[in-house]
Amino acid sequence: MRHGLLIIAITPPFHYPDEAERIMELLDSGEADFVHIRKPQWGASEISELLEGIPVSYHERIKLHDHFELIESSHIGGVHLNSRNPIPPTSAKSVSCSFHSIEQLASATHYDYVTLSPIFDSISKHGYKSAFSLEELKDKVKGKNVVALGGVTPEKLPEIAAAGFFGAAMLGHFWPSGNGINYE
Image (cartoon, rainbow, N blue to C red; front, side, top):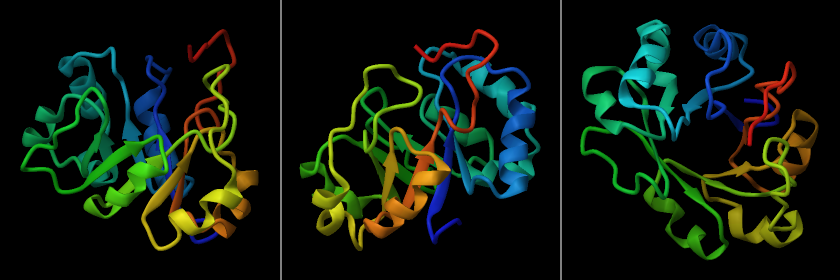
């Protein structure tokens, strides 16, 4: 935890070179407390293959955004609900959820934590602009397990902590888009 914040790395939606190794590196180095595997276009076999490349000792710190059935046969730490997968399996150890409005925060207590986005202009999605000001969120996120998502970089962690967020989630920062990689 940096600045007292839970740090989450979200995988890019496409295949990333040496991805299993990068996930282990993020967790080993302490750069991330958890990794969310978000691959909306991948089948269960592709996600399973990625998980097989990661030793079971890391699985408790991984959450799936898709193919929740994979937690039945693994030690995956939990699931992250979204518009594609809004219902958690009963066997999920931990459940988090994506939020995109202040109104949704009223139900934040039903989850281990929720992500709220976009807090800043996105790094990985061109044209995905901030929907909130940190000032307006201070009273809304304090005391709730709300994780800032969207345009988050390590330089912004002090601002995020000062606004009362529980954590910060990053995609573009952890997965450089050089060498022709495009997040769109």
